[in-house]
Length: 545
Image 1 (cartoon, one colour):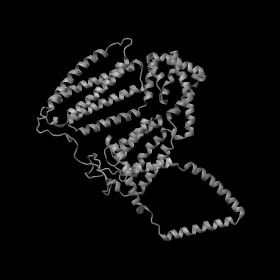
Image 2 (cartoon, rainbow, N blue to C red):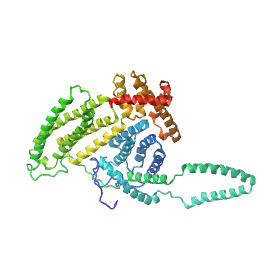
Image 3 (spheres, helix red, strand yellow):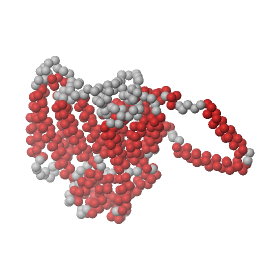
Image 4 (cartoon, helix red, strand yellow):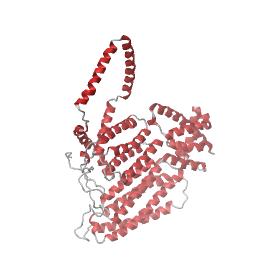
């Protein structure tokens, strides 16, 4: 099917046939596959699901329901679904995302859920959901939706039920006569007319209320049309895909040199690696000498070394990843001396591994100083993603993979890191760690409780501090919990008004726990006492900021 432009080229699963476009059982492209009633039913149910769980929803529980049910409807509506291992993995990831959204959600996880849903639909068509290709697949829905609607219109004659004219007259004409004469008989009897009028009025009033509640406004109709358009575009892609049974293994996009030993870049690359090896060796000696196996003096610049410094070293590792990937590509791979470059690369890679250990060590220094935070968790995840990217570069060199393979792998690593971070109960883990430190006699992590926002799953972990030996921390936390209970009560009332889509299990559990333990901070129902205790706690904790 032509869209008026050159088709985008995307890699097909190696196990699929080498045709030009994704096809159904009849060999037709998905965009031209016959329309079946199950597909129409799936599209309509998706519109209803999106309206109830997204448009009319007030919270993350609605998105959780959407991400649980939408894959089933997409599978039902796909012209010829190919439910392979990729679909299974993505379905499990969507289930985990939905569970976290139901427990204590975030908008980051909602974005991950929609991305996973597009990737799942792509996998249903037998296509491998690389990150950039998934973005392209999502964009093509704007064109594919239009083409799909046209195809639906052309298929209406085939789908329309064929009713014989005789059957229509046999059943319809008596019905019309019954209604007409029945109304005449009612009008002819005043008492019957009065009773009938009252019944009609009651029905009309209920119908009016139902219509006012159900009939959408203009924005909702536009939302329905958008869901219809996008759903059809996902189910009936019009993108042309490059499909090949040949593995993309060795040097696909790398230019061959004029002769095996002719690369003009060998010497500069060799000198670069040698220089970096020496530089990294000198720096690692300095790093281990200054930051390992020592007691840090009073006034040590923790933020500069362990926060900003760790960030810059992470950038250095990312840059090393780029350098290695740029060196080992193109005609340098055909140079007979490339084996020497590989040996230098392994030495430098080992040094990069030691540098990664140094970055993790700096992070632990900062965490050991005054506790754990959300951003330090981001640092750990980000550093791990960089390390994974570096490992992919090494794998590329070992297996002679091409640059496209590397970019796809790097983007997969980044997308998986974002998904896992969104799935992780960060505040619960962070707060649990800080509370354990405080109860063990180290008051420094109290600053993280004082100055950083904490969601419901994190507040649940604060309850042991109501028995803390440190009087300032104990009373400050009690005042915080008293304030949090008021907010939880207000949120519960708001959720009751908004409906099930606004519910969060963590919020409900927190409210139950706070109600059960409210006697521990009964004195802080007095707002003046509460504010005084909080001010005292904040001032005390700030010394470790």
